[in-house]
Image (cartoon, rainbow, N blue to C red; front, side, top):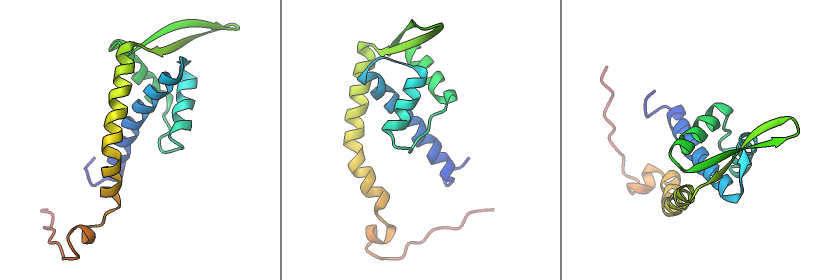
Amino acid sequence: MGLENPQYWDMLIRRSLSRFFLLRALHERPMHGYEIGKAVRDACHGCCDPSDAMIYPALRELLEGGYIDCREERDGGRVRKVCSLTQRGLAAYEAAAAEWRKVLPHLAEAATQTQSEHRGNEKRHIPRERG
């Protein structure tokens, strides 16, 4: 998949946002997997809709990295793993939030700025693809 393919950028953005919103959800309170997925969907207002196939591998990676702890909790006859941020996870969330705060204004500006605005309305030569 090439960089010119919108699906490439969609996948990259969704993965990054899902991880950030996952940390944010656990910053709010401990949650089990289903709650985390719902919190991520709610927080991003539909811009990324993480599937279980995205949430659970991310949780496993965070657990292995020491960013979250999970404990088993009984809910009726059901056993659920409830996850919470560790100190390392809190530091990761705070670092991610700080970086997003720095880049978002510039990203919004760059994404809305057209080439003609940027280049003073001069025509730009774009070489043809080889093939």
